[in-house]
Length: 403
Image (cartoon, rainbow, N blue to C red):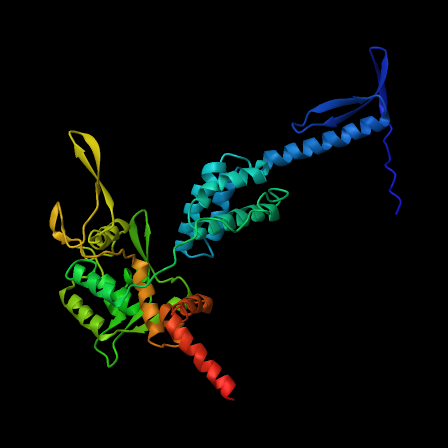
């Protein structure tokens, strides 16, 4: 198709210093009338078009919010449909990786290079933190495009790949489990560890567990997962809104845990199975202190800070297996391995798989909503044993060629 010919308006003229110019007046972004001049109508027409575009851009910029303001608005919009724990996680990442580096910029001024520089700190963290950070960038700036706050997102080419690979989770061996339980027998984390090892609950599920969900006086004792622990400003918040629908489940209590829970209930003055000295749910700081009973008994090298004559002095301690701690004779370095709360759950799931429990049952007991999570663990555990794998393949081949 032939291009449509532009219609050039009829402009007035004015003589300036002996030269004739074409002139027109337009309204600028501040509402003031300004004059534009050119030697030909065509050049003046182009000048007017550019000026109008500049004015439109100026008006657009004047209306656009800062990154800080829009992030707050976006988080508020999500609060009605997401769990409070999810919002808390989003808020932390948005503040650290979006608002801190870019908060003062106008949304319309953020460039792809700005975004690439801003996410560099997230790249130094784990893959999961980086992936969720880049996801938040895309969600926030796409929302701004849809609301006509900005014309295009600066995050379209932001890659989801990045961050430090996470170490593969390792289950505790039977021997390590026995060493761990012996090391903390009678200490504050003992009940927590037992529930993790024998029922596979997540940390937030254990810390929210109440005695009204522990059924010991039935033919087949079990516990029900119905609540989740969360902290806000270090204070515990108990939610009935679980991580997923699949997290709501009933789990059989094996005999060793049954005895542990009966003893704990007899000594308890709290509605919580794991509680602080006042019978309340643990705060985040209190949980860290409880878990320190585990970490201090390992041989992991650690740094202590002590003040001598007002000066801060760092001491590096390299524990020796079997020795007592220099400043606490009750602590014996009996573990040549480290343990995390999640490792207890991973050990439970791994033991179920080794015992031959089918994947769907493992998925239910673990509270996995997505079967892929269960099957990934199942595949790594079930088929990472060369001896077992060899036997499986040989048996299959014998059946094939015998037929």
